[in-house]
Image (cartoon, rainbow, N blue to C red; front, side, top):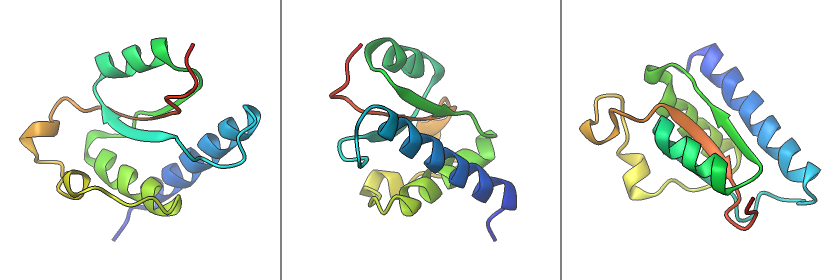
Length: 106
């Protein structure tokens, strides 16, 4: 069962991303990318793109939050994203969910 707090975090994150997109004159989230990143990658993305929307949930909730956000936005998960889980050795350093539009450079 999905934790109530993860569900509410996902709703809040989707609201923030949609609000941010509309503030910058975008009626949809077309072109926005959602990524699970390390703190170093987050800093690099924030230096190169504006606006960004980041979330730092608990490590055990990160992958579920990512899936919920993508499902609420009706975005498909890639094969790699489907294989994400808390115990994945590839994702040990991932700490953040970030959304940005690569067309909007700083």
